[in-house]
Length: 405
Image (cartoon, helix red, strand yellow):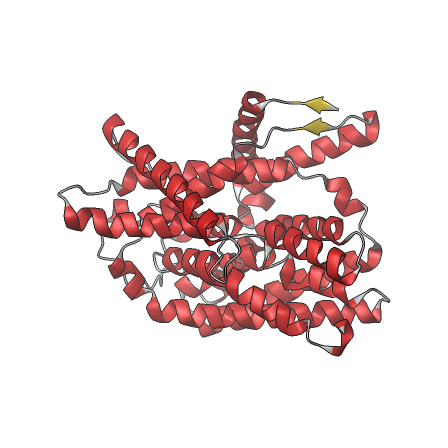
């Protein structure tokens, strides 16, 4: 076992991002199907580590102390770049997109339970390979895995949940770009970008859509931004701890994002200070890229190899259904325009993986085809505020079925 400290881990994560960018630039397949560079680089590193384990029986352990703070900084930056006018603009779209998300939650669980029963597995495994880990991610999977073990006597539930969530994280980052690219080309949307915010400042408005665009900032703006991000993380964690054990309990990233929204809408109204969105977006994009690089390069792919063939079948079916759902449902009900195609890519990201995967999916699409401001309002709001709460309700509803009595 080779254990790397936090500094070596950060160096390797940075190299993974650079390698990913090089791979996407040089390999036509990755560029053509709009694969995000953190996903390409992270998977490349994970495959190398898998080969090292198989050939030499060596295993590398990274210090992931920075992973959660980086994720929280990303969500804080989303909150700091949100304002009331944007939320009002996204109001109807948020509701419609949430309906699409809820529909997928039910479909994922129905498919999981049906295939588990057909393949001779415990129906609880169907829920684990359904919305618990695919729309819920590693955190939700770990929480429900503990419940299934303690209350339902399902041994190995946590390990199965982690493996399923890992599978979803990988494939959520792989299929989003190709789905959006297919929709954009099929419906000839390259030159028909429909965007309600097109008259906004192009530099500030495309902060998250165009992460590669160079933006002018200074040290003062960056220090102020870091201070606000630190406040979001600190206050957000206090709020999370205060709500623990109550019916209002929320994940830490939701609390952090909420604090960011409060700061972005109150501070400019009570003072002359204006938040520099350019520096916020840069901090957010850097945090997102490093988070995904760390998450993917630390994947223990042998956990996926160890999945039983029936579980692999279920997860592959779920992946195909996610792509078809994004193309035939999400895209259509969101308006069948360019924004809808970008939202379909985002839905693939957190419908199989996590909200950061959704954001990077949309970034790689907007970097290539053009901005979609409404998508970067809708997806973070639904992914951060609503999906975990709704998913919990849906899971509890399925547990009332006779299968689990």
